[in-house]
Picture (tube, rainbow, N blue to C red):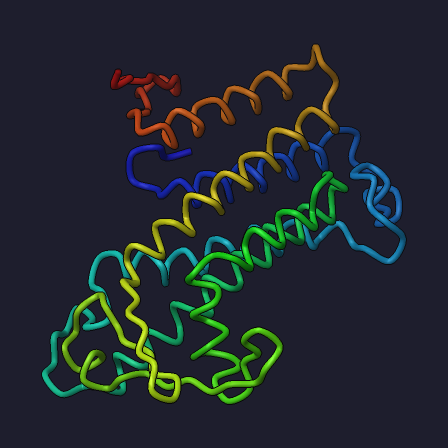
Length: 244
């Protein structure tokens, strides 16, 4: 696991895949039903959905990292390329929504308590509301039970800044996408970390080597989330620099 160059979400995605791979490799059987039973999955749920969540998180993280580096304007900085800015905005919002869906799906897959509360918490995040207003239900978004419509102020897209303005009739709302995205990433990573910790405790024996290794990974990612630095040694060990 690369703690220096990967994002925290990428670390968590890799950990989900690591949990999956270790459980699969332990006394492997070539029988999907028996593999499903290893994870305690409900009938009709295939174990490969765990890997699907891993890939979805990895792929969407590429799009989100692209925004953090270049914003809506993109690396080319071509003046007047408004279409690219709209494409990057809609792509970013869709990537965020997919990551939210992965977290909720993992709660359901592993039967972790409080899925409804987590789902409700995500729905209250401003970037999820923004996605629904301009990237999904812009003509039929329900606000306090009443359908309303939203549109993006084009001049704010043209400016290439992180702030966009959204219009609803005569009301204008300002959104700093970078700030909202950071808020979302904090909540997402917190929930994914909880999923990983709970799943390791559920699936692996307390005294097993695999469990100790995976719990160590959980703890190291948690250190990154606290703002501490985690790095890899050439011999494979990891270290932590803590900022008090």
